[in-house]
Image (cartoon, rainbow, N blue to C red; front, side, top):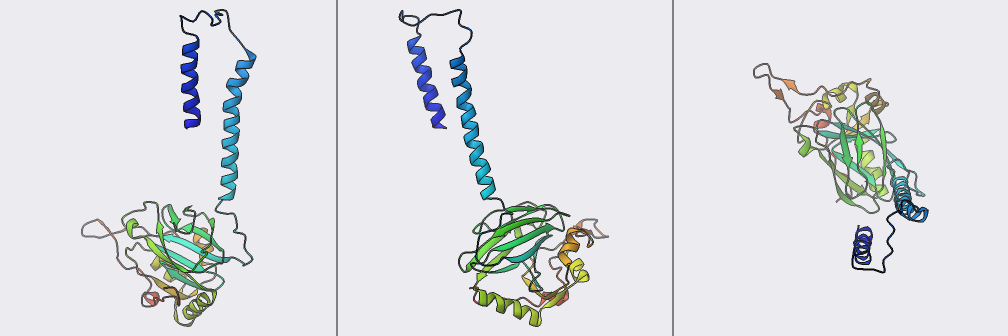
Length: 267
């Protein structure tokens, strides 16, 4: 800003001093109407400024494109994400497992997220890892992130989505590759089942949902949510007595409600 403001103020004072009424040496040309040199200077400066800033924006937008894969010698881990009211569902298609409000990833490995919403528009955001991305019902978007070190990170919804928005958070645990494999294996050995019926129950509005996990996820579940073969969440239910929307604090399938797993080595 100062690069533009300071020269402008200096030129204003200089012109006012040079062409003051008492300066008899200043050139007086009341018939002046056009100068190609002046026009060139006047238009070239903003044109070059716009080209420079536009180039920076284009380059920066390309480098920070959420869909751009992260260069790595490691193959990316695919994770499917569904924003629900008011919780996050994470599906691991290669491992065949899933989790609610609990995201476990191997450190040093790129993660390719495919995201959608089964309710209103929302945003997926892990501030310590990178870009925020919007998710919308009936649409799929992508995001590439990577945790360079092991640790625990805070993930959240960054877009107001209703009564339970303030508690729509999740934990991110970046663990070693071996710990991630053990975690996935532990889910397959004793987790609940997430099929279409369990998903419909999970999609009901609920707040303060504790982390839970599923040892088996029905293949194609995420695609069914995106294509709306599985319908969006039902929204608030109304009680017959008061007619007010009722939000259940717990709406997890019974098979998953008691099966919360903590990844090994995530502390």
